[in-house]
Length: 401
Image 1 (cartoon, rainbow, N blue to C red):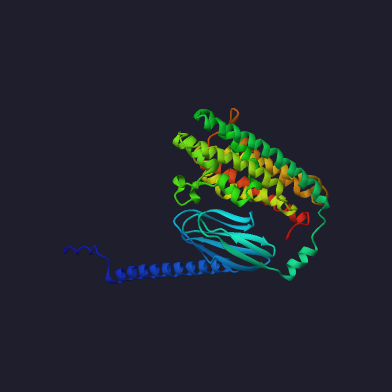
Image 2 (image 1 turned 120 degrees about the horizontal axis):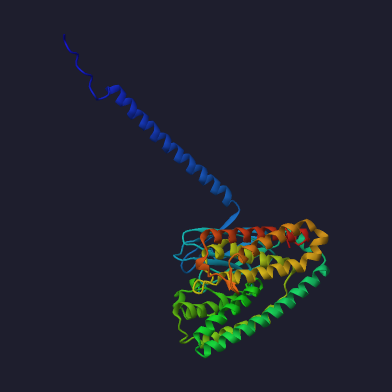
């Protein structure tokens, strides 16, 4: 009986062509999908950027560095084309109107500002870079808002009490920094390390208001990132220069003049804080801005106290001032918008609970021992509180001023 030959192992030519054709179709479909997604993303970005004014920060300049906008709400997209994290600020004289910190290299962030007519200065990345100008022209709406401004009589009490709070906290800061300065002058490293924490906490209770004073806040509180030579830059002074010596170098050589200057600067801070009038529409905005900085930058990165890792110490002090502002406005809110108080109080309690869970003995855990998940929880809680605070000004008739 004749045995039939076995079939060949290789597939027929037609089948091979069919498989190859399927692969080509899949590749083409993938390419079309990628193109469509990129086109959609580009369209979304274009729509998102409509109405934004783009400012590009280069290593030693900004483009443009002279701007003109109509009064009212304006959005600025700040693009960082330098090789280090930078900040961008709008200044009204010595006062910070709006700012964005820690803009990473190659990335951009948006600053939204509600601007009154007038002339402003704008900073440009490093503190040594030349400042620019921002001219804000009046509009019919800004003129109408000025005429519709609510009576300020109701705000006299809260503003006066906040001034008393600033005075008492400034005195506490001067006392704490004075003790720190004496320890540094005596060359007592261990004592100076211990005294840094209460001095820093005292400053953080003032930080929401102090950060309005651009020049003085920079000498007291600027991080090394914003100086050309970082920690080795002679202009790097203040708390963080001492922190670097105390906890990184562990060497007080040459720090006596730095501590003396810090003492002089915090003494001037009290004078300037009490000399500057705080408009009622900025009472809430200063603490809300501070919380957003905590949520967007400081809580996740831990860069505020990078040498001592005492960040939680400062965060809790920031919250203390936020609670004070809410309590000052509580009588007005109880009458005008009582429904806002429960979510605000809940957000304050939630953030306070986050900090309480990280307490050890009579202080807080070092921030380098706080997990990424815990840091994000702090950031989320701070953002929730800032969002809740944003509803106060409209409820009190201060929105748009």
